[in-house]
Amino acid sequence: MLIPWNTDAPIYHPPWATGGLILINTIVFVAVVASGAPAEEIEPWMLNYGDGLHPLQWLTGNFLHAGFFHLLGNMIFLWAFGLVVEGKLGWWRFTAVYLGMGIVQSALEQICMLGAEGGGSLGASGIIYGLLAMAMVWAPRNELSCILILGFRPISFEVSILVLSTIYIGIEIATAALDGFGWGTSVLHLSGAALGFGVGTWLLKSGQADCEGWDLYSVLAGREGEKSKKRKKSKKKKSEVQADPQRTEANRVAALAEIQRLLNEGHARGAHALNKKMSQASAGWQLPEPDSRQLIAKLLEAEARPEAIELMVAHLGCYPDAHRVRLRLAQVLVQNERRPAQALRVLAKLPEGSLPATLEPLRQKLIDEATKLQEKGPVELACEDW
Image (tube, rainbow, N blue to C red; front, side):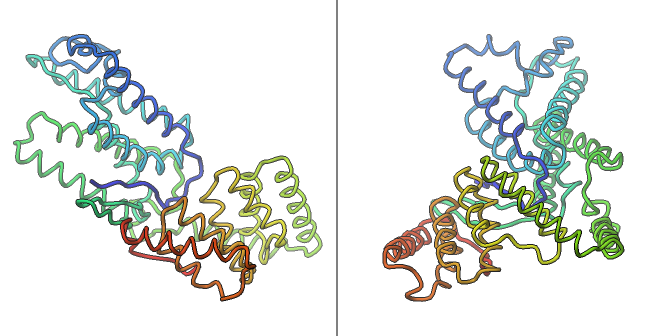
C-alpha cells in the first residue's frame, strides 16, 4: 500500500475543507454500514445508468463507497492532493471545485450511459483523479512524502507530484487499453483526470491559482521559477531604493511588539506567520532568543508541530548552544513525527555534559526510543543537517 501523507508544496491555506470532506465521506460510509440497509435502498442514491437523468445522484453518488478499502484509498489520496489544491485555492473555492468536478463528471457519465441496461457507479475516485491532475499542473516539481508498506516493513521516501501522477495515469491508460477502452473504472478515472487537467489549466491561466512560475507549462517551457525570481528582484530593487535605516528599525520594533502581543493573546500561528514574513522581508531579522523560545513553546501547545519544527531549526541556526531547544526538537521528531533517524542526527550534536543532570535521562530515553523505532519503523531515505 502506498500512503502519500505530506508535501513540500507551498500551502497558503490550511486544509480545512479537505479534512471536512474526508470526515463527511467517512461518516456517510459508517452510517450506511451501521444502518444495515439492503442494496436496493442504497441504489437510488448512487449514480444509476439507463434510468434517465437524476441530478441529485450527481452529488450523492460521490459520497458513497463500495467498501472500506475503496473508502480508505480514496481518502488517503484526497488528503495528499487536497493539501496541494486547497493550499492554493482556500477552503471555499476548493469545496466548489471538488463538488463541481464531481457533479459535472457524474452528469456527463449518466448522459453517456442513458442507453445502458442497468449498472451504475459510486465513489469519489473521479474527483480524486481530477485533483491529482490539478496538482500535476500546479506543482509538478514539488514532492509528496510517502510511506510504502511492503509486507510488514514500511519504507519512507519522497517522490515528485509529476512522477507519481504520471505513474497513476499511465496505469489507468494501460488498463483501459487492455479493456479496449470500454466503459469501466479506468476510463472513469481518466475522464476525471482530464476534467481536472482542464479546470487546473483554466484556474492557472485566469490567474486564480498563482504557482509563481513553477507550474507544468513553465517547467515544460524551461521557464520554471521565473515569476518568483522576478518578484524577488523587484522587491529587492524596491527595498534598495526605499531603504531607510530609521524606518527599518522602527518596523522591526513594531513587528517584535506585535509578535509579543499575539503570543500574549494566544495567537501562536499568527505570531509565527509574522516572524516568517519579517525574516523574508528584513535582512538580518531574528527574534530575540527568549521570544523565539516562547514562540516555540506556544506553537507546541497549539499542536502546530510543523511550524514549531521550522522555528526550532531556525533557532538552532542562530543559537547553536540552545541545547534545551535541540532536545525538545528531538523529542518532537521521535514521539510525534516518528522520524527516528532525523532525531538521532539532532541528538548527536548535543555535546556530552551540555545538559543539566535532570535532562540527561530524557536524552537517553529518546535515543533508546529512536533506536527501537528505526528497527521496526519506516526507513528514512534522507535526513537534514539540523
